[in-house]
Image (cartoon, rainbow, N blue to C red):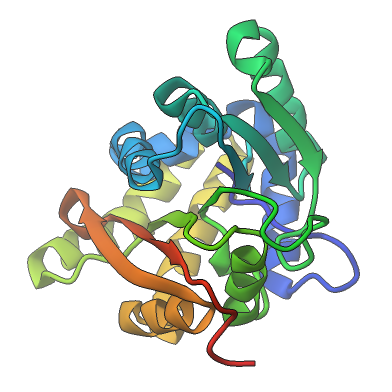
Length: 254
């Protein structure tokens, strides 16, 4: 997975800030997923992979692949082929290093730099698509979802994993305390850079949900031409898996 996003001239301020924070941290990046999810991120990834239900002969595009954890989970679970794309050379280097240690997985995974908003693939080129921790770092989430759906064949599944904000008031209060105080404190145990990273994530997650509540996100999925959209809250609402099926027609909105 990757918290990192585009850093070209069209990058949003959130993307540029993420680049500055995460580029030096790729080697230890997976720690942040474990810290934010209380160690639940493997279970979250497994739920997303199960929602895709890819077959061995199929190809899956994994967007914001980061260090390659989702790509590897797809191969292990589904025995499919995966193309992993990310904006960050540092993240892709970490993914390649991980794959070199697992040649049986590397044979089914290819990696390349690409931007989620402008994917270098043909319409309907992939059987399915996954993405993780992405929409908080794009300028126009609705347009990005349309672009992601574009490269999926009709009937293919699109699935996403994202951090979330718990609905329950008691759990929300605990989550707020942890992200605002506990996460930066954990970061300081690792390095000064990780302390800044923890503070960044603590504000980026609730800010995104304030601008794009869950029901609005599901509407964007449907408008992108993805039908049967479902959402599953994970770990008391700290994570969420969203998935649906690419409709036969195009997006319902321009």
